[in-house]
Amino acid sequence: MKLQARVARALAVLVLLLGATVVWNVSSNPITATAAEPLQSLVPVPVSVQAVSGAAHTLGATTKIYTAPAAHGVGDYLAGLLKPSTGYPFPVEDTTGTPTDGIALLLSGAPTTVGDQGYQLGVTTAAITIRANTAAGLFAGVQTLRQLLPGKVDSATPQTGPWTVPGANITDYPRFQHRGAMLDVARHFHPVATVKRYLDQLALYKVNYFHLHLTDDQGWRIVIDSWPRLATHGGSTQVGGGPGGYYTKAQYQEIVAHAAARHITVIPEVDLPGHTNAALASYAELNCNGVAPALRTDIAVGYSSLCVGKDVTYKFVEDVIREIAEITPGPYFHIGGDEASATTDQDYQTFMNKTLPLVAKYGKKAMGWHEFIKTTTDTSAVPQYWGTTTSNAIVQAAAARGAKVLMSPANKAYLDMKYNSSTPLGLSWAGFIEVQDAYNWNPGTHLSGVPESAVRGVEAPLWTETIVTPAHIDFMAFPRLAVISELGWSPWSTHNWDAFKVRLGAQAPRWTALGVNFYRSAQVPWDNGGTSTGTTTTTTSGVPSGGWAPWITYPIDVTVTFDGVAYKCRQPHTSQPGWEPPNVPALWQRA
Image (cartoon, rainbow, N blue to C red; front, side, top):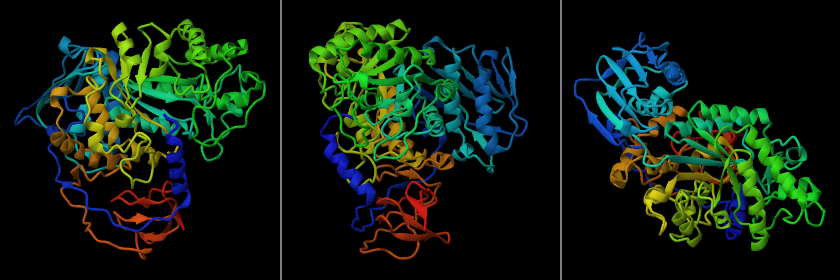
């Protein structure tokens, strides 16, 4: 998303992905690192970490998890994480006391300074104790505990221990209340299993809001009972063609429940009044001329608009808001509002004057891309800033009135932007965003006239014009999702690239265990378990023969062998150690 200037560039990207040949080359070796000490490798970095010598705690076959009764679900979640790799049973028992062994998750004794989302974590030889004021705080503490264990603890198959946690006292709480990630399922549809997988990844980095972009010109992705063709017709395609898809209400609720179990609140988005071609194609009466346009599979923007002057438009809008609000327990409903180039300013104001009260009617607070905030003085409405500049009069005025701004500057936080000119996926209309670029900005001072007190938090959107598979999501989101999570959670006083890149590099074994196909940026000293990648810098040309190797640019249709199996390249890309070609069918298919 955003800006019509993206279109020409994105079309070129799609052509490349569909079959252009590229020049062979071998990239420079990445920086490598030895295994990091756990207390020095946490992302996001806690407010306070104190090492305690001689107090390490080792989990064993008899370790129990004790929970405050109101936090039993957090204990079950932790046990579910630890069982597959360790093979230990980790029984979960309720307690009202202070256990002296095992792992204790307690809703008592935490200082008020950690608030509703923070925690205290103490590790001794006898026990591990996490204290918080809420179950959400305990869940955040569990994610820190998870990172204090070896990365292979996140493996889905049995691994060899020991499972030792260093002695420590940690006190931690977030800088901003809102730390979000967005997934666009409209440009390319992503099924429930893919969304759940992404939610699991978000939880590790203390993300607590999930923005689900459900509708756009290229597809409508949720059933609306009173307007059934929205899903069956409007959801029948996607960018580049293909079957598209949509969620039933039960499937949407399954996503919401999966998120809630990870203390993540879902924010549904229905983009209005523009970005509505899928709806306009589904119902002719929503068009001013009464004629339904064809479905679109391109990535153009800014050409569609609901008919602002028709009463049926607001029946449609109310039905959609009502039906989605009924199955969304979270407090927010995102109404989009961006790139409404086909709607006059007067009509845009009229539309919002009628639509925003409908959001409130069904018990939700309005959120939208920052353009919409010019139409209201309601300070509970949340503008999401996606611009590429560091000043915006509309947002500044809203902040001055008391509105809280969600920061998602496209040239810093958009996960669909290419890392550099040679990365195979993504767009570049907002520029390239390497890992250090994603890190080097301050959400609290980024926008002039919007002080930190007026910033609600940060969100990392992932638009999917070029994102088709779970492996594609991984490659674009990681490591930058972890970068944005640190900006949202950790104190600004800890902000230091040289220190952060080491902690970020230490995430590699965990991502490998989780099967995350991350981008191995050359800016980061990746922890390879104390070994180097074993690659050398060479130059080659033409089509290489023989087996697959890392750090080579493969063109489409080239055939290589890997572990005795022949694979054909599906799209041009630079290979990465341990990433492929087993990653079928994202980049390779069996020849």
